[in-house]
Image (cartoon, rainbow, N blue to C red; front, side, top):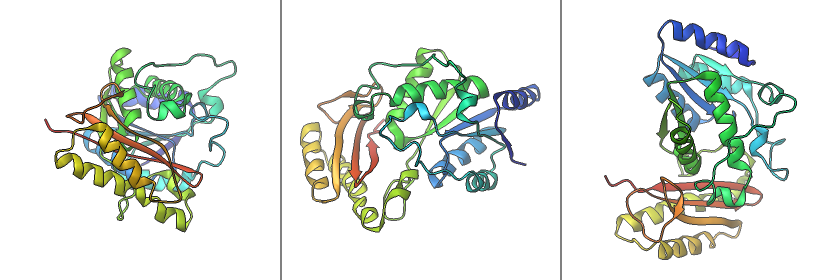
Length: 283
C-alpha cells in the first residue's frame, strides 16, 4: 500500500525499518505533475528494487525569480494514483520549510558540467538541483536513483556529483518518453495552447532529422547545428535558446560528432521553454 509522508523524520524512520529487513531501495526524484515519462522511471525502479520512493517536491532553489515557480503544475492526488498503480511504496512530499529550514545557507555547487546548455541561460538552476538531490540522497539513502535522459545535462551533472562526492548510489539513466506525435513528455507541455502545441513539434522533428543526419555519416558539429537552427527557425512561434553538441561526460562543447556526443536543444514556444536531445551511443 502506498504511503505518503511529509517530514524527513517520518521518511528516515520508514527507510530504517526497510533496511533492517534487508530491502533494497530505489529513489525517483520528481517535481510532481507526473506523466508517462516519470512513470517509466518508477517502473524501472520497481523492477530493480524491493522498495521504491518517489519524491514530489517543487524545488524553489532551482527557479530564478523570473521563472515559473508559482505556476508550475501541481496535482498530488493524480500523482498518488499514478505512483500507486505503478507500484511505488512511498511518496515523500515535503513543504519547502521542511527542506529549507530557517537560516538555510549550505549549497552544493559545481563548475564545468553546469556551464553550458541550460546552465548558461539558467545560471542558478543546477546549484538548486545539486543541493536538493544531495539532500534527498541523504534522507532516503537509496541504492539506486533514477533520472530521465530528457534532462540529459541534469543526468550528467548528478553522475558527476555522485562520483566527486563519493556518494554510494548507482545513478540510472532512462530513455526519453514521447507523445505519439514525437514531442518529448514534459510537465511544461500543459502550458501550451493548441497552436503552440502544434508548433512545439519543431523540437522533436529537428531532433529526429539531426539524428538521421548523424546516422548517415555527418560528423561536423557546426554544420549539424546550422542545419538544426535553420529548421527550427521555419517555425514562427519558436525562439532558440540553444542548439549545441557536447561531450556527455563533462558537457564540454565539441566540434566533432562521435560516440558519447549529446546533441541538445532548448527552444521557447511562446513563453514556454522546452528541451529535447539525442545521445550518440555506438559502443
